[in-house]
Length: 473
Image (cartoon, rainbow, N blue to C red; front, side):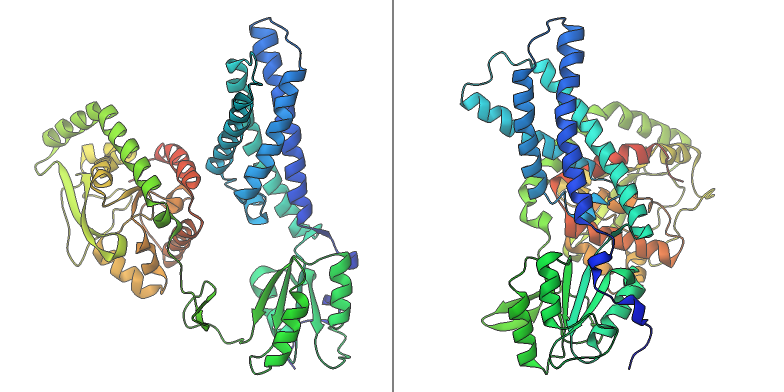
């Protein structure tokens, strides 16, 4: 029998900590209070204090109540109440503000269609929206920190039930403990003949009784694939509950990372990956790329001119640095940058820029410090080789090296590379000094591809402004 799980670890969770759903309910409740409170504060600031008009509060409260309903529905549809989003340190500013715009447009649009807007103050609307756009992200940030502390202390727990036969439940529990540290939130149940092992909380009857009173967040069925009837009967029994139900029939590690399963003409197939979400919304993403890139080129034309003159006066060589990079679907393109070095390498051996690199010119060091050297990539965006947001492309030599180290590295090429990305705004920017740094950058890029939304792109662009202020070398 496998060891590593103490008998005291697995007891029914009737006396365990609070479920993670408490955090979600708390966020939703406080957001309702914030929407109402900011509506009143906006009225006091703009109408009562600035305009000295003192209109009645009732019409504004009625709109605020409608906004509460709309925000809750929209945020729920956007997945912003899912626990992984509630606990995000980055708190999804783009998604939060985007949801506010959608909710407000829905409420005001509906009232306008019903001719119920009356003499609603537009100034009040803008002040109210601004207050919500500041207070709700701050709330999320505070809640994320509290939830993490509460989970670490055991006050909040993610309830997991593992039901199965033989050693499957014990081995699964061991692996979850080692990976996620959730040992205090795991209960074991057996299916089949009675089991006197004190590490199990009971059988299917006890599991059903617990689910009826206090549902688990996740139930894992761990039964060998050879026990077909046991798999069918257990899944059929537990299929009546809304809890997430997972099936594990083989404890051997996958040779390739999977993303689920799908049937094709009745044949089960494993999903290696799905079409990226950004590809399904390619027109929307491309529209934003073209509009923002074209506008930026016009606004930054004076900066381009100054940079060109400075580079020509500082050192001999071309103004633009062009280098082959690997783009979407492994296509090759040439990336544009302002030249910041006295070399223009594009071969099998390319040294990454380092701090105090002797190859960097005087003007180049200034351009790198304020990240102006990256601006010509706006031309790559307009040409369709790159996007504003996406995994950063590496030199071909480096890309090949990283792909040999990590099986999943090539999956970054399923989308267009970007001028900025999720990895960069989370601290993985510039020189890849260690294998761990490369791995973390890859994980952030793959996470971006999986969770893409237009609001995530907005958030990354917003946060990039603050990242650029720190410069590069």
